[in-house]
Image 1 (cartoon, rainbow, N blue to C red):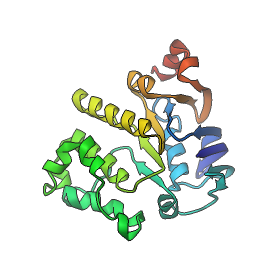
Image 2: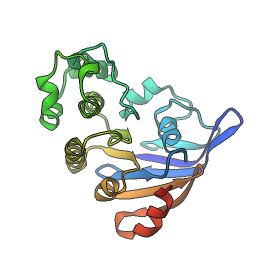
Image 3: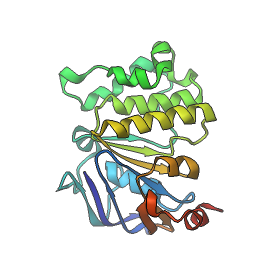
Length: 231
C-alpha cells in the first residue's frame, strides 16, 4: 500500500530525515520506534503531506504522491492521528467526529458503527465539548475522527502518550481489531516499547534522522532495539 523510498526532509538548513525508507501493507502494523527528536513525527508528516520532502519519493498504491496536498491524500484514503490529539476543544464530540466527513463522498458522511463499538465512551459523550474530555478520551476521539474517513492507511503518532493504562489497553485492542479486519495498513509511531512490540508486524528504528534497524517482529533483537530507545 505504502512505500517510502530514501526520503530526505529539511527544516530550513536543518536536515530531519536522511535516506529514510519504510513500507506498510494491508492487514499489517508497521511500528516506527526511537527516542524523542530522531525524526519519527517528521516522517509521518511527510507521509500525510504536512511537510515536503527534498529527495526520494513516497508511493501510495503504486503511484508517487509528489507534492500533493494533505486533503488530496486524505481523499485517497490516508488518515492521520497526530501527536497531541489536536481535537477541537470547543466543538462537541459529535462535531469533532463530523470534521472527518470532509474527505468522504456524501453517502459516507456518517459515523460508522464500529467507531462506537471500539470506543463506547464517545457515544455516551456526543454532546460534551472535546476540551472537557480526559486525555485518554480525547485520544479515542482523535482515532474515531480518523476512522470516520474509512481510511486505507491509518497513520498514528504516539497514541499512548500521556494516557492512563486502562485506555492504553482499549487503544491496543482497537488497533488489533483494525489489523484483523484486513482492509487497511497501519503505521504507528511509538516510544512505549512493550505496546509497540505486542502490536508490530514490521518495524523500523530511527536515530538521528536515519533508519538504524528494521525487520519483522520475529526478527526483532529486543536488547538492540531497547538500546536505541533508552536515554
